Image (tube, rainbow over all chains, first blue to last red; front, side, top):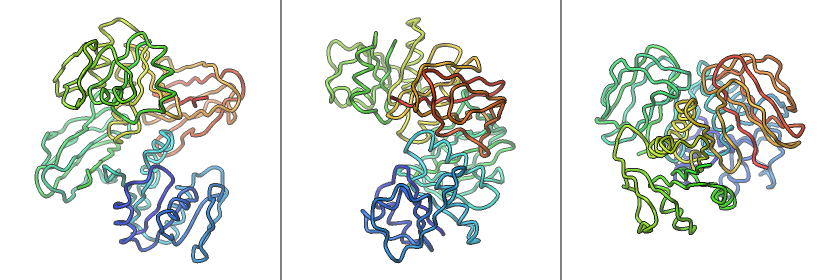
Length: 204
Length: 204
């Protein structure tokens, strides 16, 4: 797993440390490098246009300067990961900062959906946009699940092992969402016929 | 203008005070009542299922208890405003908390689009979903503007007085967004042919 630390709101240090310990490589977008220095984490790479770093960059860090104005620092980092041919990427700090950045980063889940497995994690949720209109995952009784439509409408959703089950039902922006459901067993399944469904699985 | 203080991340106290001073009525959703007590603001109404308040409620506050499990506290507050026949509503604290709540609240902009003028304000932005596929607003040179699609695709966007103009162009989730544009004059205009466009106007 490759870990990207982006420049949105950072989750609690326990969550940071958990994923740092599991990461094969750690990539900081340039705005996040200062934060990592403050919590004594040295990433393997720092990527971006390098206009936001105020700290001295450690000699062991590989700097990838990319000044393309058409892509955000997080996109630059994801594009770099694609060149590493690693499929599994977790991003911390993709959400919870400026709302336009958060929404833009949710759109990136769609942009890169067919290129790698991209997962955002914040203080509350693991956030995914499953690509095959179906997801099955481990959990435990009582874990929070929220389902939101990224496209206008997600059609024909059915669930297994959720407190408020959906049976071939639709979610639609402005009409219905699936906030605050719950897992009722040690796994759950969600499948649907059409549309882009953001699945948020509560942290234990 | 009616001001609703909701239970997401509160903006800075200067912003709170600015809109409190302009409000005809102040409504707190129940989770926000404790916060208002801490900053010495007494709302006119508190609305919700009243399961989140730990402070003593002031005798001058009208309590509207509504335990409907199908609507959120913010929806309950908006539904109450509709009964007051006031058209102009500002919500502070609609964004920046749990991501599912933020997205759900953005969907409410669509749900209530034809019933009242609903505006969210956070530390960075005034957030709107204009209903007639067109908006003209005062601003000043350098103010941040971000345009994001709430529906899949917003078609045929044209702008007046933006740094990076759009001329009959589309924005689409996962393909293109309009983050971090800027106003270049004392007003700007945005119009489009089809879709739901979230317009975020930077705070001065």
